[in-house]
Image (cartoon, rainbow, N blue to C red; front, side, top):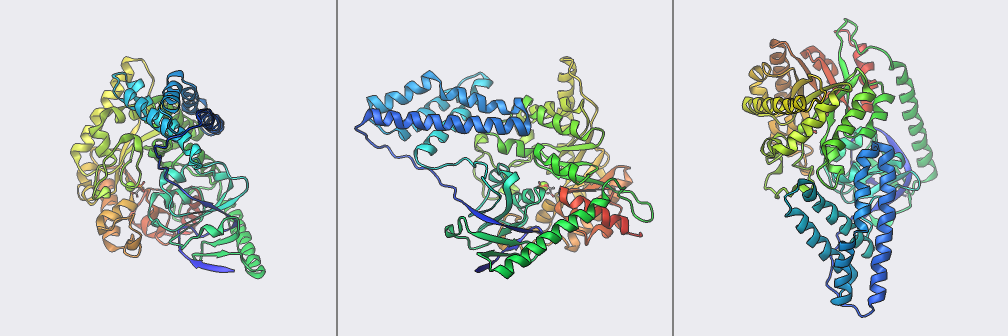
Length: 538
Ligand code: PEP
Ligand code: MG
């Protein structure tokens, strides 16, 4: 039996076999070959395997997000069989006598550059697709599986590091827990794991040798045990049963109002990152969605998601929630959330860099596509729009103008939409300090305490070395929250908290005393908070 200590992000147990996940980078070499037939067959077999992977991905996506969103995999399947693409690869293998991986990579690059240079927006977008399928074939030829297959049994996944884009693609059904060497407790990977209600241990000296061995994550103590002895395993199983029991006891909170003893009603919403999180939202009886981190749609995609793909995702969530509020946060990409296809240059200080609304207001076509999708979906439920990373009144006014332009376009096309509520996230000290003026421009504020803590304390939330300095209980952060609530109320708008601090039971009473109107938290935190609020006498 071996025991390791790590940083825990969720008080929960997990017991299961380890799945060691290794992300390999593929380096393609220009190798000469002699047996041309054999090389062609290598390519052909790899293409067939890529086809099977894409078919499986297509079927998974149809089930999880619907046919229209899944259609991107159909496009990839068609591209695999494209005659010109095949011809390009054949030329390099047969005429130049070079290996299949090199032929696929070069042909993929050539096609991708050709598509990128076209005027037609649709064809331009195909550049990323052809690169994606080429990468998939190269990866198979090199013996690497970049793709995350569904797990065959429930597992604890162990990895060096997990980017948010890796995490969002994990097979949630069979994921018991996560253990990583790198990462920070305040990162989006940690937040996603919490949203999925999966314990995560960070900063563990992991080993490849652990693959397939039995392990226990103790999310209460922040420990990982490999090959537990009988009594340790039994004790962990007992704790796991208590977790389940605690969850069952909270079931009696379902259907009840989130109201204090003295009658103060709190709107208790859930944070989601994906349509598939709806299950947890409903299981935990959230009263709405207070933060839909829409950028995860972009992170899951191999190219910019189309208006139709986004529309279907937003519509699915809006319809599932019925009359309940669904607050869609517009694209908050950048910093730790990166996608290759936007070709954003590396930055010295990504957290202070080109992210979120700064991207949307400089690349308006991307922003307008998203706004069109959100407004179209608004006809199917109770949607609100929320803007991240605001620092000035000018930004808010510019966003409102873009929304008006998009509405006008929709009216001209006779496309239905509703007049949605419009709010901003208060997650920079600048926004707090001008909240009195901002409040006059919007319908609501939602305080993003994760970034507000980062920017107020000048602590990079991604830097694991600074985890101990990242103190959301700092008086400066709490006063900023208080000030935002007061200024919001002065202008007659409601104010909520959607950062992780909103789920901190130690602060629920403080927030209620401050006058908070809404708390939006990971789905699994909804019922414990309702329980807490109902016990408050204030
Ligand atoms: C926040 O900053 O508190 C927030 C809710 O947004 P995110 O964590 O996605 O940056
Ligand atoms: Mg934020």
